[in-house]
Length: 270
Ligand code: C2E
Ligand code: CA
Ligand code: CA
Ligand code: CA
Image (cartoon, rainbow, N blue to C red; front, side, top):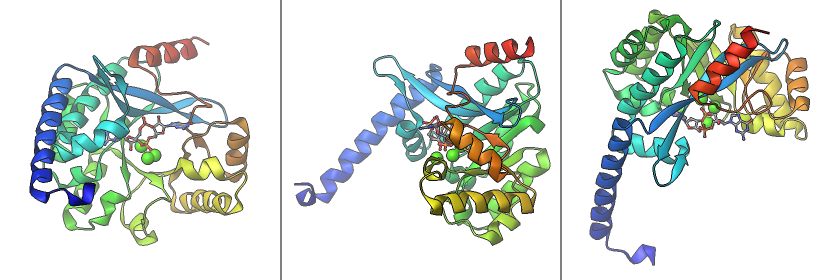
């Protein structure tokens, strides 16, 4: 009977659980159990790989591979998200530095990280230490980051841009970003959330949303990426609507660094 629990006891339990989780995740980060997977972003007209989204994974010795939906909220709640992000960027950029071809790396940043005054320097220094060109890094932020519409968030985003880091607005259409914010923040890219891509064939409403987002991106000079493209039919419809870049199982699932390198090398020698 959850609603009869004593608030105090419950609070203590949460605190204890939090300390255990914090220690476990910290240990995992130290032991390199958290690592980056790479999912291709593909030019839907010619099939070229134009970039990769970096997606965090945790291989627990007992539980196996844990997905980010399980541990990113934990990292945010325990204050370890900054450390996790640096770890993921460091591993991803170090690996990708020697891969053939010119491609972007897209890194996810949690909205709460914009409260960290050291965010910009941390990310810049981490990228620099790997030798990967900073101009080929893009950060993905969700509309949640823009909700706290204060000067600090705005200044941080502008500074990323000034460093040459690209900006993508992730999961577009699921939050509450206004047209004013789209205009006020210097986004290079809009990512259409996969919930619209999944339903656009059968549902005229979500098809209209996809069409509008592509049009909006085009008129504001932003590249548009469709997420969660799983079928040839979806790709065909997206191409016809003017979307150039796709990401999804049709083009490739997230891969480990070694497999990503192999994929690029095979393509280079074709
Ligand atoms: P997201 O940024 O929207 O990432 C796209 C998610 O869609 C990924 O799930 C990816 O594996 C999945 N996906 C890609 N193509 C397809 C497809 O065709 N079909 C289906 N069903 N799914 C597809 P994943 O890797 O589980 O990541 C979930 C979320 O966790 C991400 O959503 C992102 O918000 C967050 N995340 C992942 N890595 C990081 C990280 O390093 N830092 C932070 N802050 N968040 C991260
Ligand atoms: Ca993303
Ligand atoms: Ca997304
Ligand atoms: Ca998402």
